[in-house]
Image 1 (cartoon, rainbow, N blue to C red):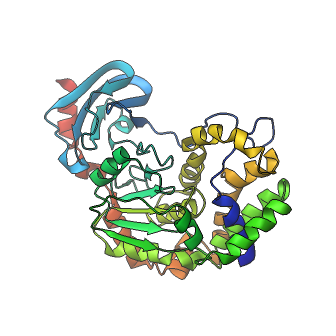
Image 2 (cartoon, rainbow, N blue to C red; image 1 turned 180 degrees about the vertical axis):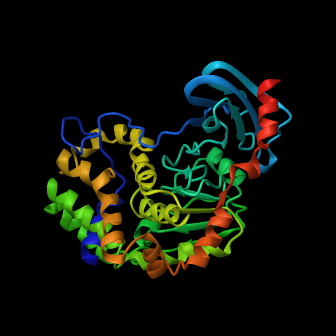
Length: 383
């Protein structure tokens, strides 16, 4: 089984994605938003922020350089019967977080951009602001996930520096790292740790790369292969991810983990982190599928390249896009083979109930902790 995983990682990391048109289940022919939120934020290339709401309404918006530093006494924008608005902000300014007060309780929240707009990384994301089953939210600005960092531009480096990330966990093997070493700020004083999943040296990876392009798995078999890969991530290779959880428990600094595409190894790790923090399975699956949304433009530019690698469109669709079946297989194994997520997290990552409680205390928050209390909110709405 580990050989199958290595073979799959070969295909995962050759840096190609596809756009496939047609009518089959595996086709992605448009940018699909799977994880819809009541309030969405886009950090535009100009530096300005665009806030979008599901419904038109009246909203008061406040800002700060962290959720704790939002100035609730000074509005930066007020919307009347609108579902979007732009907040001017100069390019290169520190990242902003927004406190939103709306008429409906669901439209009152602390938000920021989910995808960090890096020119050299298409899948760099903050996993904050996601609701948990106990009414809390995952913390903004604490845990980031990404694709490879080797192509970050100078402006990306400035933005990276502003996130104050002090822990970088790299899931790639030695060959991947030699081909595209992470580019971090020259003054990076944090800790970089390689945590290779399955195959550190990459020798088998290199050999199987040649074999796959000469024959390999095709079409539906490719989907079966990757479903098997995710199944193995959930079983024999799961403990390879254990150092990530140890870092989350011990560090006090913002942390980033990544692989090459930021979708499979990174996607599985994110699913387990969100599970440990108390996020429901449906939300986790939808967040996992957002890799296709954020990588869409990259996929478009790769269409022409696919004709030269000798792989048909159905195969490449199954290899280079995340599929719902992959992550569903993970949860199927968690339930059927381990008796549920709590037992699974304990067995695979030594996340005992006490440690899970510590993670939730550290990486989730109650809305009341970062927003004005109900009477203050009502007062603000009436003014």
